[in-house]
Picture 1 (tube, rainbow, N blue to C red):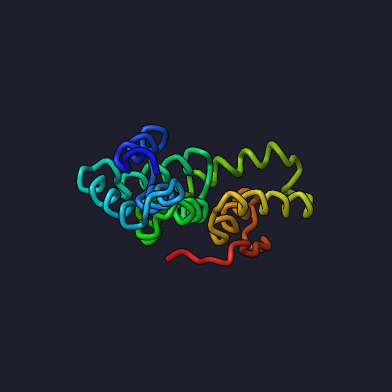
Picture 2: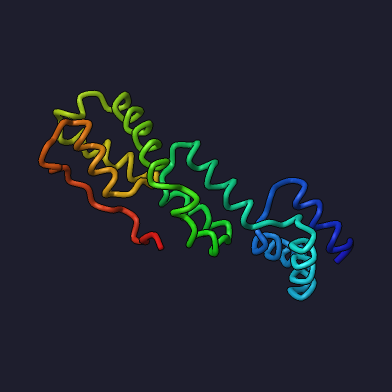
Length: 166
């Protein structure tokens, strides 16, 4: 392997914020030993150049800005190797914030699927649209029922994600 592990890690971090796991994996892929990669990750964690907590908060905020729900945030955190942050998902995306994002997404879905309040097939599409964006099925059911003006909350919503939040 040519080059220094520290220089390589710094170049990687200059391009994009990485979790400790991502950085370690990439260093090993570049040809450094797992021991070298682990030592460099510890060094950069100690120096504050790798900060999984800050990265998790940043990713959660970005997902919320994109109109995504808590389940989407959890999926992103897991994909990026931030498993400790998954347990904090409720802190990272409070229910009030998720409800506000859901309201915005429902407004967008209403424009995308006009007539959804009266047409069951379009209503199912609206529900799928919201679930695909990672919103909690219970919140989707409540929001769709409220927007339709249903008093009985009889909107059919089945969770699409097998994983539950911690």
